[in-house]
Amino acid sequence: MSRLADKVVLISGGASGIGASTARLVVREGGKAVLADRDEAKGRALAQELGTSALFVPLDVTDEPAWRTAVATTVETFGGLHGLLNAAGVGVRNSIEDCTLAEYRRVNDINSMGTFLGCKHAIPAMAQAGGGSIVNISSVLGLRGASYAMAYCASKGAVRALTKNVALHCAQMKYGIRCNSVHPGYIDTPMIAPRLAGTIDNMTGRQWLETLHPLGRLGKAEEVASMILFLLSDESGFSTGSEFVCDGGLTA
Amino acid sequence: MSELSGQVAIVTGGASGIGAATVALLAGAGATVVSTDIQPAPKDAPGRFVAHDVASEEAWRALLADVLEREGRLDILVNNAGVTGGRATIETTTVEQWRRTESINSEGVFLGCKYGIEGMKKTGPHKPASKGSIVNLSSIAGLIGSAGPTAYTASKGAVRLLSKSAAMYCAEQKYGIRCNSVHPGGVDTAIFDPLWQAMGRDKGKAMVDAHHPIGHMAAPSEIGEVILWLASDRSSFVTGAEIAADGGITTGLMRRQPFVPPR
Image (cartoon, rainbow over all chains, first blue to last red; front, side, top):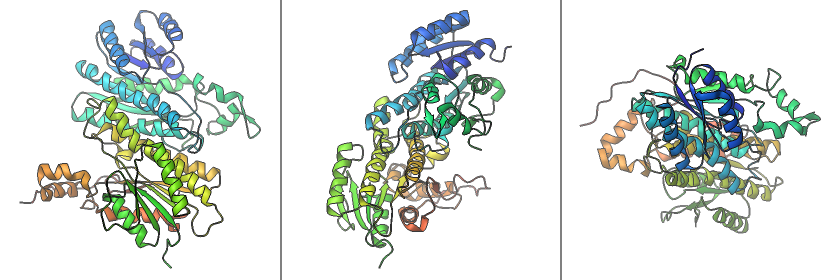
């Protein structure tokens, strides 16, 4: 159980969902997990549960000084930075007709600019540590357009392209830093909880979302975390700038 | 009667480059063209010119009201205006630079689609010929990324997916409005002026030409022709598609001739 031995991983959105599941795996595999989240209560509770290999730092991903502090605290506490998971994000339903400019900007600020800022501030610390791996959470909606999630699609399309930009830049600079995007289908996390209860086409929200996946169910956060762990570890050493899909067959 | 007679088109960024070529081609096909830009239009350009900042929601509202009032309808919208936003990388891009680039390239296209759809709906499906086509300019950077400007690359990735979402929405609502993205490779426009200045035009162009499997960079009209096709009913079954017009850059691998700069 040491696939990430001594590797330090900073996780935005680390207090819940895919971020929290990844934090558990990172610690289980011998790494250190820094949980960066707006939700202090949840984040601190999980860090406490994970013990001395985990740390909580407060982070609003749209706040550049907060990113600087998060990276500095990580390096001070654990002596370096080797992995970054940009998992913080919001899922919002809107269409091209009903989305307001303010809402478009809010979703893109969190999902897309937040990922940009994470990469920007992690790269110097990771280069200093001799290299590392960045994993950005995009979505199947960064691959396919959904009529009901315009701003979200745009933000995840931005993350998909941004990831390649980061990968190519780091390759060119010979930093030894890889960067890949992960594209989950609908995963049973707090982000989609509000959608599960409603009714669509005589089905519950959960049933409707389940039918989108050929595997006939929602994904589990642990299943995405397992893909992320592979990308954070040296096992994926030749993968960079790529799109890793974890969607129960949705895009097949 | 020309193919696009009676149809009204808006082309943003119409004063130069791909936009100017598109204005000329749409007008040549018989469309009534409204060309918008923050720069002044060339004197002999066809169509009506409107000063318009795509990042401003107020400017979009005013533009649509003006076009529906004066031209009376809207059939074609080409969201072409955009900026590279400088050369800043993932390490050097500031939040300010990021926001400026996104506000023009990403928010500008979002606003264009939103108000364009509203305008096309007002025109009504009972009108003849066209039910509406939106063409959004992304880039090969939106497809394969680039090591170049970070904010630009992200904004073009956003345009790629927002176009698909808009296409699905318009299909779901049965508006009959199509929406596609175009992804040009290197196009001989003012965007390359800094390179021409640094290397000399002949040498610089030969280098950019050699990057394209087809052997040359595009003239603006070569992208304009793709936009014209998407704007017209000839592409009536095409929606949510990402059309690469890139001389093969995103296609695959080939053996390259070594690049020899001209003397």
